[in-house]
Length: 392
Image 1: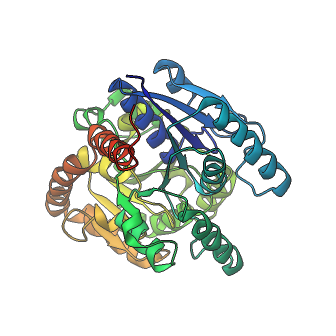
Image 2: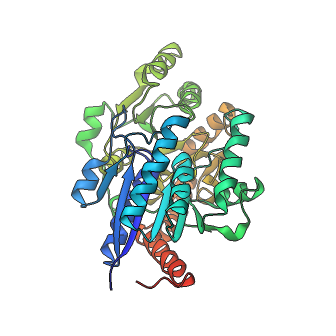
């Protein structure tokens, strides 16, 4: 019996949730010894850190298409479509599994043209949302509809993604399947506070640390958190704000903190390797997720696994892990006043906050182990192969 040939396609191999999900899936499937799994990605250059070290460490074979880019470019996209078509024809994959919006369109079209029998797509975050133009939203919805009919299965990392896709008319509910974005849980369950790291960051023993882990980019919500932090400091002078991540907004956010008079209490930790994230969460007394758009951010269950209370904007799939006043607190997106109230409540009611985190830890442990995600995808692949009578 030969191995099942699978190609995963993603636009960029940068440090990010969708990319980590994809690589962990490939690594897990390879361990079953049933699959020959490959990865295709766009150019590796860019301001963000990449995940090539993970590929080398876990012997993940990848191919780079230079014209495959996130921005819409009809000329380059057409070149990519035909390059991918010939690549798929040559390598005769059994399954093509696409990730991200534009790659999902091009990849599924090329797979259909090349006669790949099974085509799967994962929605990590919807390409249509309230923070872009209505024209672009309608274009994205139309494109998703156009390829849904040639897709065997659309996986979603949160129930909210399924609901919004069905409401938008992309496809019927039967086309979608929930597969949460898993990760190795042990590093979070057993992480300990690193006093040396705390000293290097300037965190004092008496500090109460509010933390956020996200790239410093648009729609990640840092500006709302910094605005709220000014008011939190008035009530709790020992508060510190620890921002883990880097990006194009670093200077703007530094200027905002300075203008509000809180810069001396804000720590910009910079980019941190994924394997080190738990060391920084361990320094936090409270984690905040103030993004405006996210499928279901893995930082939420990661913090809960470490027993950290969580406050989150109520967006997309956040409520599926942060059950308000049960496993954490939810606030309306962009609502700084509500965010202030939630932060102060968590800091002043530590026993209740701790109980929320304990309940959240139990929920996260049941939903997010990487083995659970890989087993689900493995079972779905085998079901699709069997349904199409494809014998390996």
